[in-house]
Length: 373
Image (tube, rainbow, N blue to C red):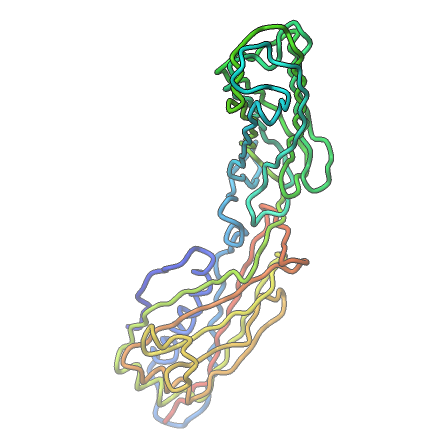
């Protein structure tokens, strides 16, 4: 009995290419399982078709992206993206004299900071998300100066385009932010595209309300944003030389090895990929006598099937010569390795992905067998 023994050591996307070894093994079984007459002799063509399970686009996505079912529809979900910045009183209020006991002078302060997306995410097309904006007040007074007309405003803009997504206005006439408290606001972001991340634009107006405190310019407020519960219809991500790598141990019966070497006249393989994914790159298969010999580059130690790629809807063919079949049939142990390198097809190795995309492989291995001898 001829069989493949082993387990995938990579992720699901690489396991599909490992099915090449299964197809080769099936071919060998078919060529040796029947009773062969002694005369006359003739050549018989044997074809073994094989189709893998679909490879979902998750296999090509950054670690920050996964898939889920949202309202009955498949969608991408993105891990939370967050950042924050602290501003000292000395930075916001240049006229504040550190260490004095006095009313805090009026001050106005503007700044902006970014909540970037994961470095491998260029943009996300949001179906729905929540953006939490928060202000932690570690000052020893309320910067809103309740009743005196103070305010704190935060505008949320797309980092790439500058488009306004939403804004928050905290009015000191109706709200307060006492010392050592936090105020947070949840914004719902729907049907928006975010490129690179979001920019938070801060505007603080803190008028003198006459209240006396000990001024400490080292105290601060912290402003931050947390983009969470991110469901997206599509993403554009970096796919830069993403490596697929897999290997299996093949268990050969000694009698079958002899039959293969004596009867196979020639062989061929055909690989066809069916997909609409924006990736390009190369695929290779290596057959060797040990894991260390896989992809060694030494033809005496491996049989290489190369010149394969991620091209879609185009048959990719190659030959297996008698010498190659005899070579791997003669290995004391046989290992099959699979290696692919993928990149995005847009500028900067970018690719746009949607949850419904998949990649299917259709592999057919054929051989000419001499029978009757």
